[in-house]
Image 1 (spheres, rainbow over the protein chains, first blue to last red):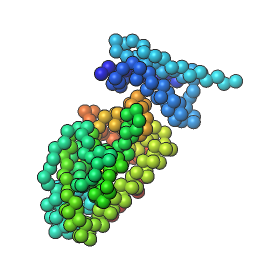
Image 2: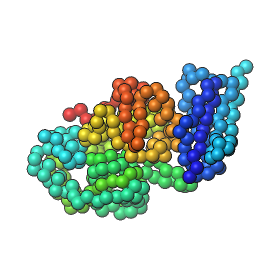
Image 3: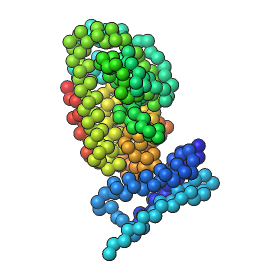
Length: 75
Length: 237
């Protein structure tokens, strides 16, 4: 099964160096969306929040499979 | 002297067992069955007949929901029973399966009844059963309230203490023959999230993972990070 890498940028770039084996692109995207939800839900209250929170999913052959961007507008 | 039998070591976490009690437990600790990884020991809906004792490897209790999602409700480690009173029930309400290769013993219903006629063994079995329930309560708190990074740290502390109790920890390192998928399914998160959090614990120099071995680099810091209090394991005899 292919290995996918889920790099996160939340003000600080946090690359995924080990990756995760997942059966296909579609499942990798679904898991990325679900993970975005829980990563955001369980951020520590004082965690630094950038203006854009993003996840980039990179699949086999370094192909970008999907990107997820969450915009946080403080007014 | 510490017994080489992991069931006896575990039960002696509660109280010492006389030599004749130990001999009886020893007699029912064979023959060993070698089971491959990902093998169901008993499935939901099956009629339970024997009590299964894990003597090596990791197994788990789990349920599958629609769509094939799996929730792991307990990790079973060497010395653990898959419910010593389970044969009282008509049908299993969950599955028990191996996660790694396991050596198990199947103890017949008649043998369990004979064992429980010995007061010290019966009390030790009740203790083990109460600890299972307490562990399930702690898992509920863990999954319901703790941040994911803390959940994983808590689980790793729990395994450290449980495996230490049966003599399977050396220099704060233990064999962890399970996948990140297994950890994710126990903690109710995606495998990506579990992976990120394990890496975060590693980056904080709290743990090291190599070749299915987990090394706790700083036990005190990992326990305080996850709010781990071993009181629910009732190992304070």
